[in-house]
Length: 214
Image 1 (cartoon, rainbow, N blue to C red):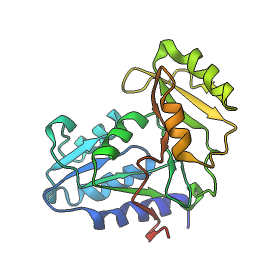
Image 2: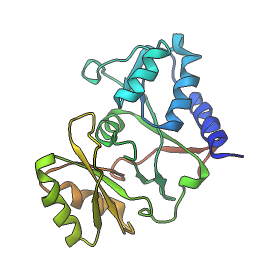
Image 3: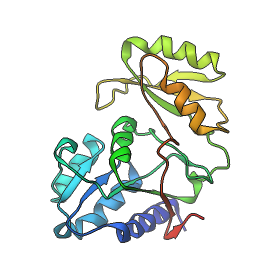
């Protein structure tokens, strides 16, 4: 089975968690695009979606799914998103698509976070995929120096500006044995907007193809 087939199956499997007449949180990326396609087939059953990126907003609107402002939504029963890495405890690295801040906000609001991935995203220890950190532009060098002090290798993702108008620094060379502690630590660096570790709010369910990760 190809990666794309696994992504499509995982996206379709996530539909079993969709509640009727509810607002769905929708993430960003190629796997989520398959979920948006599946959601479009049942768009009359939901009230609409809260989107984590301008890219996903365009896809949702193109398929006739209303996009709602999070500030106007009281409850999000379900948030569906992909990941760049997932460990056995369902901790994630996200942000390869530079939408990590809005993704983390929606995940924090949602009652259930379903992560849809292909098998290649599973790892024993997070960190092979460079850890994205969204930073205020004027703080890029300060944040980079603090990362070096912690043993990471920061690389500025040049020419990328997030939907929030910020920059992304990717941290190479990490082995993240304690994702919760690292997320808390990096969050304290002045100028950091969001760290692409989803450990304090990890996934509730991880789907690989049609199968739920044990």
